[in-house]
Image (cartoon, rainbow, N blue to C red):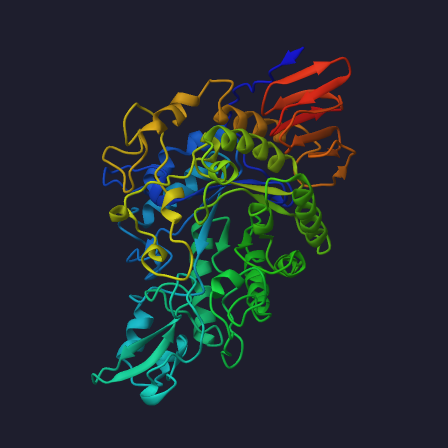
Amino acid sequence: MTQDLAPSVRQAVRPAQQAEGWWRSAVIYQVYVRSFADSDGDGIGDLRGIRERLPYLAGLGVDALWLTPFYASPQADGGYDVADYRAVDPLFGQLSDADDLVREAHRLGLRIIVDIVPNHTSDQHVWFQAALADRREGTARERYHFRPGRGEGGALPPNDWESVFGGPAWTRITEPDGTPGDWYLHLFAPEQPDLNWDNPEVREEFTSVLRFWLDLGVDGFRIDVAHGMVKAPGLPDIGRTEQAKLIGAQVLPFFDQDGVHEIHRAWRQLLDSYDGQRIGVAEAWAPTSERLALYVRPDELHQAFNFQFLTCDWDAPAMRDVIDQSLAATQSVGAPTTWVLSNHDVVRHTTRYGGDDAELGLRRARAAALLMLALPGSAYVYQGEELGLPEVTDLPDEVRQDPAFFRGDGQDGTRDGCRVPIPWEGEEAPYGFGPGGSWLPQPAAWAGLSVAAQAGDPRSMLELYRSALALRRDLPGLGDGEMRWLDAPEGVLAFSRPGFVCTINTGGDEAAMPVPGRPVLASAALEFVGGTVRLPSDCCVWWAV
């Protein structure tokens, strides 16, 4: 007997969650603001566009939204170069739009997490402009990392650090009198000078910025480069090139220094001083799960992204190892684990899992979604993954805007491919994204992947997500809590949670195993023979027991 467990549609606006520790089980939807919804026809997403689409997100079944930066910015790195942390960039609206968005989200039972960028500012920030105008070793420069160069006349950078985007992590300035001057540190683009967190002014300023947005009503912050705010004393050389490949593999003199934890503990105290359970989420690359867990100790942040899971191969033993390590590390400090498959900085997992085989990638992405949502803890969904969007790999060079694309020896510079505006409806671009075009071109094939095209289709990726999120809410054994591994055939992972079993076949062949319970959701059609179920390759199933 073949059974196709097609999901059913459930759209319901849910009341705001009031349970203790809402973040421990939350499903948080990442909105890349430029690419979500455009309300004014300039081809760039904005805050009003997000507000108009909030009913879709509430109906999808997520608990909170994480918004990428919408602050005043020259947009040298998609808004991660902030010129004014208390102002909304005109591209995205105005401060009243942010206020309206937060209020409407709360009315629909959704929480709002905003990005904060504390490692660096824009080179157009008033502080950096003052530093450029100041004399050598002036006090305005103490807010950043200015150093004299090495070699004859100071013509060489102060150390061998490389930018994550490629090239040296130092740029030499011209002094106000026209002479060659000191160098400033930028771990990313030259337009993003690193702040000096040993300076009390920097700490005081960001406390004020956090209070500004907490007073407006946001529910927390995703902390960009949370691992990079403190540099090793003396800024020592690393002694090798291709340093971007070391990120997340070892502690570096500019990443994952122990001093960052003092800052995060202070921020936790600030968050706890507000009502409504405001949270901090670390974007932190650490070489081990144990070091990542340091960011979520009881007196530090609430969550940290689990990049080890995101980068794990499609392989049952590898997945099990990452899951075990992740759970053990976070449970040791009493924190929830987070699970994420894609974000605005990596190739979409539909393409990562399938390569040139789009059908394979979609099949694995469907299974991966059910696995992620069944694991204990909190899950992050990147906009468009609920539509099964693939990476756009054929963008013309002239439309690319990722700063790493224009530099060498750093990141691969292909982040634009996961940032293409998502399709909402219609047969032609921009597929309802807005009344104008879109800042990056959308593929013609996306007409069949739009929200309107998938809504109500029981076999679509959108309806799979809707059903999974509804079941995750309704089944008491899902969300935060315990799990136990079960015996399973080679290539298959099986685990139980209270009243629930999840099975996923990552192997290339069909796998037969005893039926563990009543099937409630599957990423592909199942075949039953007596008391045995035949799990198709790259299939995940949820069972009620």
